[in-house]
Length: 248
Image (cartoon, rainbow, N blue to C red; front, side, top):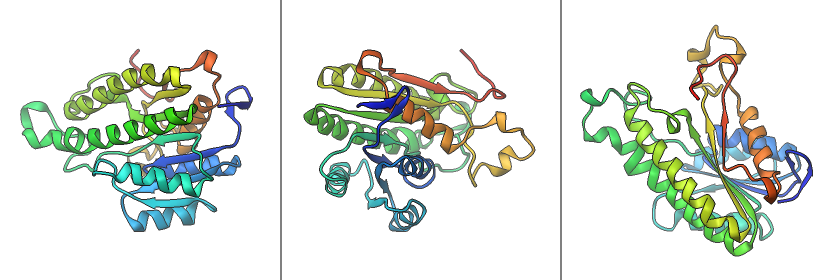
């Protein structure tokens, strides 16, 4: 994709999966930059909220990971966005049960893996394979998968989460190499941070801003990746707030 200046992609068309929170923030940021945007969410209520929050955006109700759903979303987005998709961002998150990140391995049973390996990973793969086929046939475009810090290191109480996140990282390492020669830039965006939202407000209460990141910060990283020249593509980028823990 071309860019009008270093690190900023020229306006084009964006399709984002996971339009409820982070995906909505990314779409809103790109809409303000003059992009055409479409967003995919699981429920019609979330689609309506997305369209209300992002003026001019096109919402699509679909459940990635279920047969044909990702492909249907791509077809609908392509029609709404003028026949072309320049940037695909996958910001879906697991449907969690119980503790936010799971529990210690010794205290868990096999169902602890379900939100990540049974539900999330197939959906990530579904979006990746449809996007790779579409952008590859188009001969250009950027595909970005957003994931968390558990893709870089396992942490106590987050073993099941890390298993899914490490698998996602391996998938994108393979995918990036597969689509490069087709003119497609695939990248993993690791958000090794708590993202400000209504869900994390209590967790961040009393902490300085440097202990978290925002949806706009993530959108800036997406814009940086989307604006890169093919002579210098980044295939993995990590966001880490200055005040948070960081393990190299």
